[in-house]
Amino acid sequence: MPLTLLDILAFLCFVTCWIGYTWFARVKAKNTNCIARCLHQHRIHWMNELMTRDIRVGEAALLANLERNIAFFASTTLLVLAGVLTLFAQVERLEAVIGSIPYADFPNHAAIQLKLGVLAFIFIMSFFQFTWSMRQYGFLNVMIGAAPYDELGENENLRAYAKQMAIVQDQAAHSYNYGLRSYYFSIAAMCWFFHPALFIFASLLVVYTLFYREFRSRAVKAITAAQEHLRIEHTKKRGQNIDE
Image (cartoon, rainbow, N blue to C red; front, top):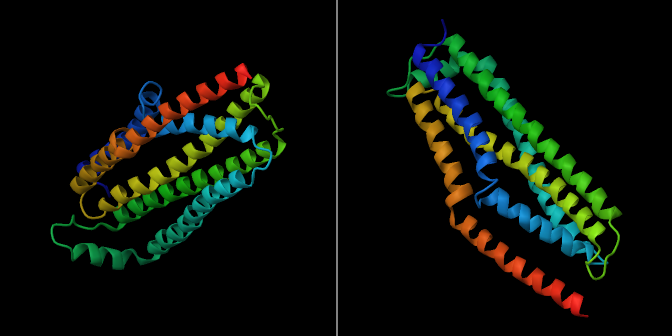
């Protein structure tokens, strides 16, 4: 058998951490301020403001910048995937390298191929997420191009349209986030080549890092506070429009 019992337990821990954290973050975001929840509110404000602007060059530039970041990761993922697939032809050299590292687990030819397969699968899924994110941003560009001009921003039908644009943008951002999350967990998967115990530790460390950054970081606190400021300003603006 190419994998030991500890290897199997480490892999199950890795899968549980990834799937479990994805489920936890999605459920937790429904009732807790976090990056995903607060940025969605910012996107709604952004799309509502967009409807009141006749010239939308600024929005086009901002969206183009977001798409460039995603395109960079998508192309980088292909390069990394090519490197991982190349290692299948260099398994003997990889065994020698791992065997020369102190405290590393004894390398096994079949086990290394399985681990490379897992790593390749991670980057394939990451590529799918990045390209789907790019497509959704393309959909958003079409919706913005079709959006009519609402000078006062009081048309409820167009406000609902703006919310739908924010939802499309939110889904694109989620796909981008899932792609980035794959990179985090790929680092944990690389630790499996050295020792399954290190693999378990790295998986747990990735979960802690993601949780802290998405729910407890200073950026989250700042975005949450800014969301309240925006809500107050939009309430004032709508009140002034009604008075006029």
